[in-house]
Image (cartoon, rainbow, N blue to C red; front, side):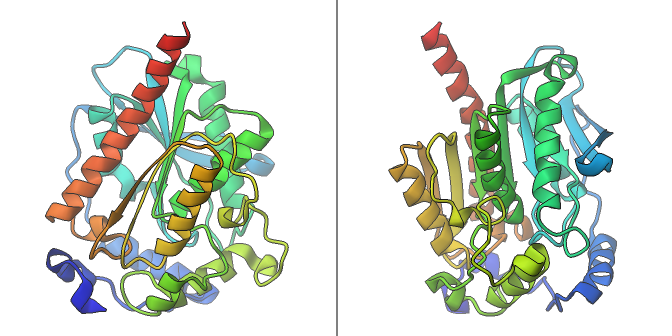
Length: 321
């Protein structure tokens, strides 16, 4: 399939080493990834602070808050959820993109350092994300945030948690979410779609990795018929009442089919959806090739989607008043 890859994305394809995803290897893989990461230059006009709140079962939960240093106005807020297959990743990886959201979408960003499987399988990660969302809404006045304009977004597993979180917030009747941006979301534990079967190995994320990650995330639930929609949103039977949605996926991503099905079901349920399919793009292409033209296009669209999500709610509120 490599001949189908956009040529400007080929270099990034060679950057990721083969991973041995097993519970006993996770610690060393995380340490190796942390050691390889280089701290990027961040926008000096954005303030980045860490806050620890009380999460599920009274466990501490770290949040990273981004806001413009020179802003005193009440702003909308984006809860950002990092990717990593529910087993990898950290809030620090999102620093550059979160800073762009702050500056270009004129918002506050709160990124949640949710616990990872296999040490903390479902429902710990989604409950951590819900605790973060609830904290943002509960403390909107203190944070100088517009409680009517809170959005949620994330990449890959962060996209899966985004999709799960909007279902959970809808069903718990709090908080109100004005839009969601689940980017190439990991939402189908069955891992047997045409695109999953196309991408069996390589390509940054593939069917083999996906199977290992779902096993670690779902624990004893894996392989059963008792998978809740809050764990694997592709299993939801009712998508009505969800917020305006922006989503995307690469054509060579194993999540292509589940994203297309998700978009279709949202549309059928009356949810407004903006969707983009990137030809020649594999999973996480924009994170590994940030200077590529298609990557720049994708990242610009993420930022504009967040900006539009907030503007859309503001316009709707103005019409009603």
